Length: 163
Image (cartoon, rainbow, N blue to C red; front, side):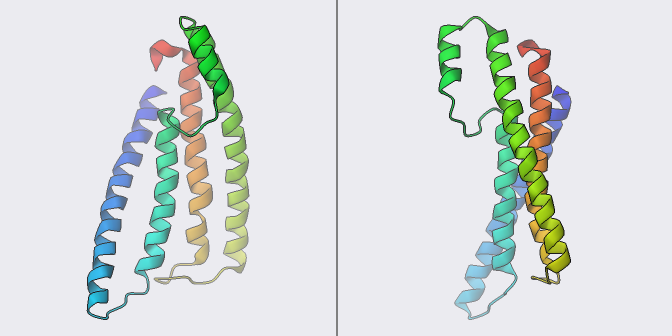
């Protein structure tokens, strides 16, 4: 499972690298063409959606490396009080991550329902793409976070020596 987690992280990192590079190129193109009073209408919405997708992909990497945002006073207490008890620390990490993933799962499900609604009632947005394709970023992003978190939970169950 650790290999799967590493593979997911590697793929997401490469996709993020390409996306950031593309965002820079498109942004520079938009700036230069505006200097000559040329407007390309599809670049701004594309950039907004790439930023949105990159936020979700960054979340996937954050969950995989346990660097995500968390309010975690109890974990600091456990870490300080039980420095040598790695099993207790891993169990606490597992429980908090499992609860978080349950919540993110419901967000992914709600995002998918939103996608279905947009698919039914949406319209063409830019470059001939249907607006539902753009809203699919939401369940896709949350789904990838759940997948990466599940892999991390599995490695926590195996113990800290396997991580």
